[in-house]
Image (cartoon, rainbow, N blue to C red):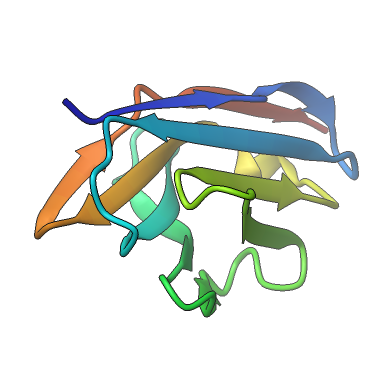
Length: 115
């Protein structure tokens, strides 16, 4: 059974930084796509950053130049380095793994940016 666990969220002042981590267990493929989504109160969940199997990345326009997605030594670990955080980045951040045609989600981690 695939499980994803996120960590690293918290409260930070505007302009600060946080690093989110996501570890997947129970995965069976070396080929996968891992991504970070976020959902702010009253809004739909939106893709924030994605890293493909070959290492290519893509970002939402709102976070380009501030956020960086990367993998750990294992393809089951992904990070999201968030710099120059803004109040509008406040949301629950979710990790998603796509492999074998299925999506798997973590439980989410809260990020709150104060002005």
